[in-house]
Image (tube, rainbow, N blue to C red; front, side, top):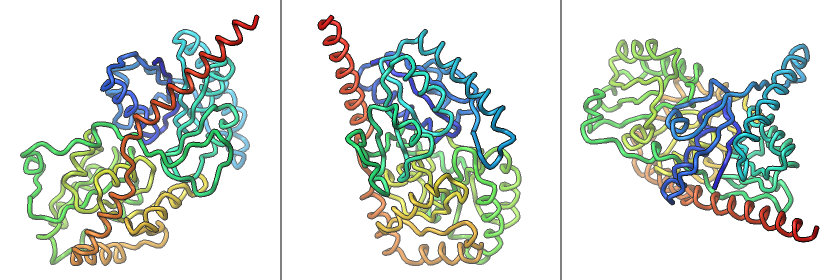
Length: 376
């Protein structure tokens, strides 16, 4: 099956494409795939591009609020559209999979111009603006979570689960935690701000650390800080006397999950799906500027199931976060209930189901072409 993937901007958007390719390899299909994405979109997905052909296209957000940027944004997207046309004509995929976000728009439009069937993937509880716009061009819209409200139409397939890449499912090798300076008897908190880190989350943790005085010997952290704050956070943990392993990001993020007792971080679809896979309790701080508040909707879904505590960024102080962590640290029964609820939200086999849907779409298109050819 020859696929092209369109999208990027963050590792979360690329992650399902990576997982689908991995599942295809397991099934014995080693057909190279084309990735049409933004040049800065890696997010720990570098291995995907080694096994595929990655092409950087020009894209930009068209924002009515910043009207003066619209002409340049239109020009950049048109360049991305033209580049996508060239690459899709060269590659000749059977199906284009839109992974969401504005980066996917030029390539999906190019696919429709070339009459290549399109399937969209939405990783959040709310259909994103790009996917809403592109849904008119798609044969199917696949949602990892049940959509907050019915998107309508026979083309919707929601609640199908999120394809989780191998690196997020791998347990940490023996001895790695010790090499990171961590101890086996400590309550371990994994801090995640997304594939690029999150400055507000990092600053909140920096303020939290002095408030842990007296309980330093019972806690330790694995912190994915993003590129800008690695040194700052390492120094903050050292000053507070709290054991921690600080990383720009973890390509093998499963290692972090497998060591963690609690996750604190953002609420993107990829992160939540991985948390559910590992059955971890979490404290979620949704990104407040996410389009249509989709991270808040994701987090509320987990909260309503009893799997997470959710705090909006503006309402969460370091004192409140400390109290929540101490409460969970001291109430193992609550932790177990949250863990069970989290595990109950995981939907296994998502990559395989998506591949079956892709095959159905491709087969329908082949039959349609065959019938049209015979009718001439």
